[in-house]
Image 1 (spheres, rainbow, N blue to C red):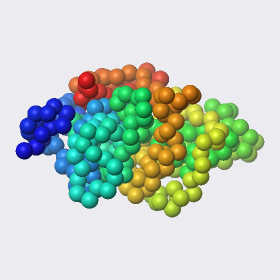
Image 2 (image 1 turned 45 degrees about the horizontal axis):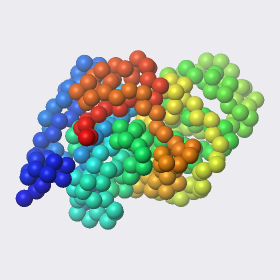
Image 3 (image 1 turned 90 degrees about the vertical axis):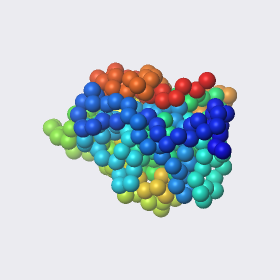
Image 4 (image 1 turned 90 degrees about the horizontal axis):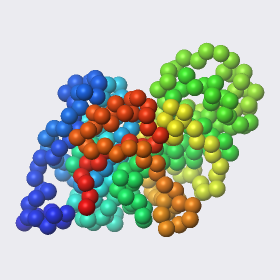
Length: 314
């Protein structure tokens, strides 16, 4: 007999139906609702996570509008990051994960549901002293910033820009001499008017572009020690590095990236250490208010992450 480790009740939690965020056709946030769907089962090398919280990202908004489809084989359910507790592990798993462990995960989709399956290499432990709400705000933004700074571009002054055309003048103004400008999105448009190249030339700046796709594990092998590397993180529309493209990265590359981040950066989130890192959470919405959360994001009201609480944790 199966026993739900969270409740101790026979069979409860092992039913084959769960609630998930759904929309029948692309469009506005009014199309979002909770729907009963099939609960996923972990395949080889996967872990089943009971989701406590999932942060909202711009990619979720784009997917809702029909402008950003999930990669082949990925869940159509919104949600690119989640935190929660391990329910069970699939065959062939060799990592440390056991039922009951708290974890946070980088996802290709599926986080805005009661359960999600995750490749075991994409899971990270929840840092000491952080809540599951806070943990859900870490994977997408922090892993993307980590990659952009230390894999794609590194230097004394780096601008991470997912907005594009409408902010190019501010970007050039912020760029230090010999600085690096990493463009990884065009949410503010692709058109540029004015003397961009001459101003960039004056700063001796480097303009790097990437959608964070088609990268393999050879890229990650060049990642050195990252602590102590100065950086200027600036994404004006989102007031911080906002990840929208990490979902399509190859699984092996994601696992390498997660492993490097876990080893080099995650210990600095422990809240018993002076000067510890902390994710910035702006607002928490219950999952049933997912439409309101999308409206809040599209109105650019947030100064940190918007988190959906899926399963309240006692």
